Length: 298
Ligand SMILES: Nc1nc2c(ncn2[C@@H]2O[C@H](COP(=O)(O)OP(=O)(O)OP(=O)(O)O)[C@@H](O)[C@H]2O)c(=O)[nH]1
Image (cartoon, rainbow, N blue to C red; front, side):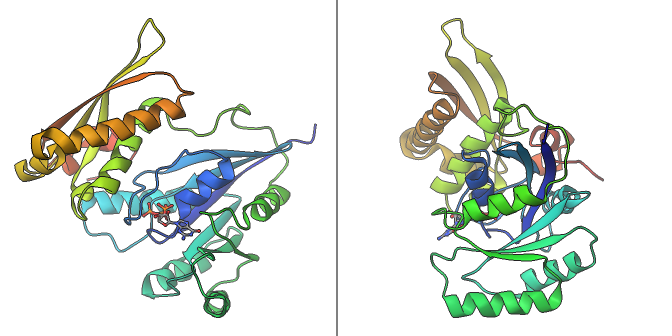
């Protein structure tokens, strides 16, 4: 048997396109994506296969200067996700160029032992001369073994990078069955899909003040799924915004999330019940951290 298996940590600043890249490599959606920064909160593993090679892609929260306790847990989940990886892939938004944020990450990366690759993303909207200058600059700060220019969104360069990843994976038995696409449970994925809709449908700050917890996840005798979720916000006014006028907003969030969950679960009918709850200090609650896959620390 020529099986190979390894871990690739996907790191970068918020909004660089890490989750989009993981989904593209896996070939289906395992991580939620939004135009707003800091969508990914916990570490998630996506499993990509190429021939006899299994690549475990560790999607990490964006790395930034943390302020809240939740932020600190997210950033430490990101660096933890990189520990012991067979390689670390740094994803950079090629349109934005380097800035202090990206440079700080690159400098921290330079001190690490693991092999490092640079992935300049969003080539579909970036200027070519800018991309080349950015690659040159970042390579001065850190030694990258390989450089790639891709668009995770439209698929440009994905096959090439997948083949290159597969090439350097060490020989070894697979860690996941061939048909498993991620390490998160269907229950957690269902919460994430609803949370993604909060990012898509609500104002700038609100999604950051909210979280989603799946309280019940049942398979009914007729094969359909019954899912009860709480959307937890910090203030009464936020509750009003999530509900919307006459309940229109929560209805719309629920409809889109229900369709998407059903699609991800192979088309089975889904009954999704959403409740909005106010809990001012949810981001200080160990159970909620655990529920969203983050480590609690004092
Ligand atoms: N034009 C373009 N947009 C992209 C590309 N890759 C990702 N995006 C968009 O960039 C935004 C952020 O993408 P994500 O995949 O959520 O980024 P992330 O790095 O996981 O973000 P965080 O969760 O904040 O760490 C989304 O609106 C994506 O659709 C790309 O190749 N081209």
